[in-house]
Length: 218
Image 1 (cartoon, rainbow, N blue to C red):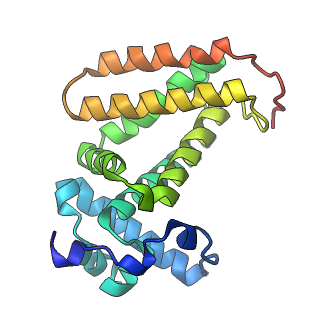
Image 2: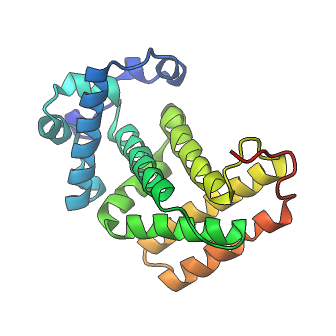
């Protein structure tokens, strides 16, 4: 592993990082620059193109500062995926899905998300590889990706504030299937048509839950 991509051991404690104080506006802006630079590098050359030293130079931060934010490029790329999903969520809220059933709306939403990633396949591949490589030290970033994906799905279902355990279980299975289809499509092992069929099929789990039971629309 190149010296520039070696993690810094003292910041590898997920509990310590999870309880860090909120970022200041200046720190948030710096973080945005880092994530933007990461996405640009990944768009051009995929996972291998994202090198910590180049990210630091492109985002105009010191290499040591970059490591304080992200201990490795796996942390960095998983955080980039969360950022991309957060941006997508904002777009979806402005133009929500129009399917008749919750299952239809979730399937439509996930295919739109898939389409957004499909437009930048090298970036999508880099983020998917990072999720695959992520170990326990990356738990805070992986949890953020999962929470954001869950929020996108729940919004498509109708904006449930208190989903039932059955609904949350269905959402988790849908999340896993969506990520799996993304990985297999990126690897060239499945077609876009099959992805659409698989997503549509798994979203029918929503119909098997007690729709609206114990849930309050926003």
